[in-house]
Length: 302
Image (cartoon, rainbow, N blue to C red; front, top):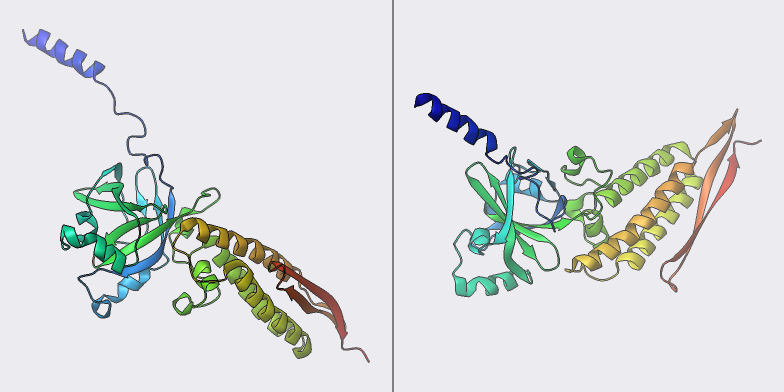
């Protein structure tokens, strides 16, 4: 009898179905890479009492991998499983907002078309819910703040370890005031291009004469203003498609400008130097029209 029971147990184990491959995989319809584009103080909290670490969440990246979530501390998970399903607004407000007041609170916070449907990340015994906004963004609560995340559509060629770091362009994002600056502080690629331009611009300040650098400085200022107006005129849009179109315009302009800066070199022959000088023509009609001229200027001659 014991041998038969053992034989049956072995047979049962051998035919038991294995766990499906990719069980932890991110459900369809969700992008892998996201960026925190807004930090909203929860209705029950005060911005003045939030811990300093909260500021570090601003502009941080989040990556949903097959078995882990990479990102800032409150959202990171070393071993994650996923599900998408109808959920409750209570997950976002920690049960602190009465049901009949929820839509009023959304309006007060400047949030639109929030869906009670979302991505659930199970990390050990903790569940974090990301609610969908119909504009394709996600909302998630991290303590006493609500984070708004925007997706990155093209995930190829991105280093996840670099992606999850806060965006750092060539200026202080905490002081971003224009729509163009705010968009740059939301976009991984444009911020990196802006940082490259800032580095090359600073190098030219030391490499060329004062007169030549004055032409570069003037051209840079005019180009920045023209690009901001032509690509991102008006307030920051709530709709992700409008933000995407503005960002793509900025990305194209900054790619061209960074490529130009990489070609600006000083050639020295003994006491002579041939250095770049710049001139720009930025036409408002059509608004996206700009031409720049780089011409050599020799200094140090007798």
